[in-house]
Length: 280
Ligand SMILES: [Zn+2]
Image 1 (spheres, protein in one colour):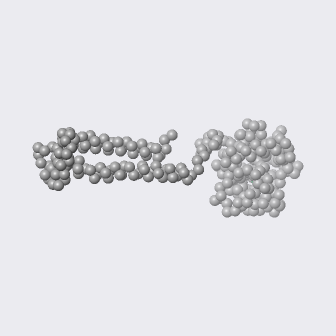
Image 2: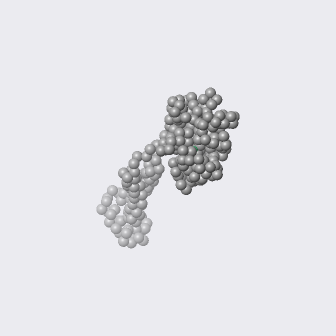
Image 3: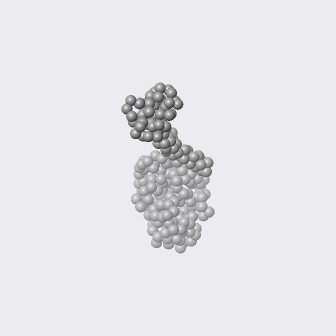
């Protein structure tokens, strides 16, 4: 792989070799051949030329002319050499210092699927389930206030929606059909849920990523019924899988919190939210 530093060094090498070639074939060799390989003569001619520039330009004395040209070009040659040598030297030295001080970079994208997702693979939300499915789960005491919850995928942040749909797809491939229980949640509803106690939510209005369309609560669908219980071994295994897949897609999973919320995931965008309690 060609890094910018390697590329810069290659460009520099080509420029440096070109300059060297121009100097060698354009100035040095003509000067040598003109002086007839007689260095002392050439040098004295050069000194004479340096002494009086007009004298060196006399006709019929090519060795003096060439030697004078070389003499006059010498300071420029050193300046050019310094200009050509210093920048790459600084680049190499700073590169080494960076490599010494910084830990080895991990690959930007660990998972091909995340790369494909971010590259624009658009996933479509599943069709909505009949309201009775949620009413029954609420009546059975499996969940609180899910009948009135907002399940509109279009109210979710586009990036978060794609990640969550990718998680659903991965879960489906492993035998778990996922259902969105709640996505966007208004500040008023957040306040209402908070009043029901810390077992429901610890976050107040605007303290949850649900208010930014960046969080969602999900459950499993088994034989047309919602399964929202980590006591169920099948669901327990499913939650673990859900956590793994969510984290693979860059989401934060509520199953890691002290007040575990296995069905909750969020896309953490810290600047979106002033306070960030680990609850939602
Ligand atoms: Zn939640």
